[in-house]
Structures are given as C-alpha cells and as structure tokens.
Image 1 (cartoon, helix red, strand yellow):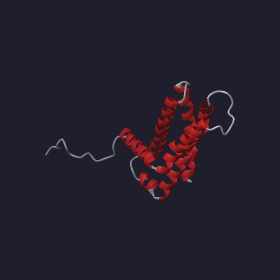
Image 2 (tube, rainbow, N blue to C red):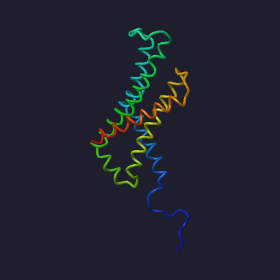
Image 3 (cartoon, rainbow, N blue to C red):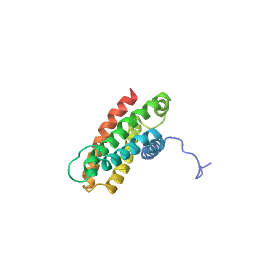
Length: 163
C-alpha cells in the first residue's frame, strides 16, 4: 500500500518556519500587551508633544522638536527593549511559558532570536513613524544607532526578566 498525497509527515517544522512563527507570535503579544504599548508609543509621544510645544525648559535656538527628538527616541527604545521585555519575560516565567517553550522543537536561541526580532520590528515601526513626522536626518544613521542601542538594552532586560 502506497502513501497518499495527504499522509502526515511527523516531525518538527523546518527551522526557518518555526522562527518566523515564533517571531510573529512574539510581535503580536508585544503589540497586544497594554503596558508595553504604553511604554513604547504613548509615553514617548506624550513627552515629545509636551516638550516640543510647552516652554518648560530652555532648549536654545531652533525648533524645539529637534532638541527633544533624540531623547524621546531613547525613551522609546529603552522602554521597548528593557522594561517591556523584562516585564514580559518575568510574566512568562511566572506562568510557566518558558518551561513549555523549552519542550518544543524550537531551540533556545530561536526563542531569544524571535523575542529580539519582535522588539526590532516594533522599534522600526516607531522609528519610521517618528522619522516620517519629524526627522530630517538620514534614515540609515538613525536605524543603526537605535537598533544597536535597543539590542544592547534588550539583552539586559532579558537577563533581568529571566533571573
């Protein structure tokens, strides 16, 4: 008896498909989590609007938004990468998600890569929105600086969340 076209092939999915699926799931979880959205988008936007419109601090000559924008980008990157991931990983530890993920065919480095990729995707979204609205600097320099800073802070946040 020969196998048909629809016979099951047991075993794990190919590694790239597992990584993409985990990346999409981590990104959905990041975007659906209210605290992380507050840290990522709402607080930096409020800080940008407040300090660029209200004369609370003397920022010198020129447009106020140009003086405030680098600090706001730093707030968005640090809140997304550090606080957001530390909180999420802490909750995942508490609810046993990390133990369940350890039992899947996805390697540990794949799980960490997917978490890192979700942070990078959200940061790229925030950077592209801010750049579209406010920035005149080259796209590549902003992306490289923010991504490197975000990845460094993300590692520390993940360490704190797992400890």
